[in-house]
Length: 128
Image 1 (tube, one colour):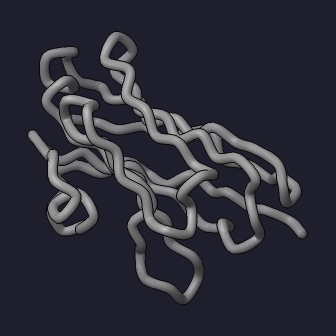
Image 2 (cartoon, helix red, strand yellow):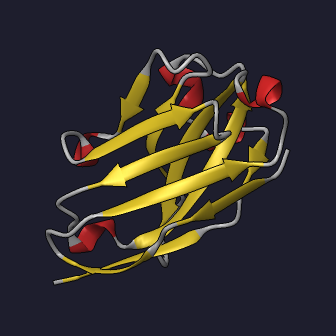
């Protein structure tokens, strides 16, 4: 399973970006993947941002992005999206998408060690 993240860039505070993570696998495989977004800033550990269960029925967010970020999963496009609104300078980081086979529970999806596949990162820079 290959994951390709894209959509990062430079944006002013208050602006928006939409990250995409395209999965190079069959639709049947993708539909069974829980998907997550993590981010890492220089000198910091990778942190959980958001995740969606394999069914798409459950979504999870870290507190700092609730109400601003929205995760969605499009099985027809084999792609997961992270819509990021009202961006803040503290959102600046490299964002990584991951896939967890049949991942569903928050307790599982919030932990990077539980993911089976990772994409390369995409850099998001928010200027003040």
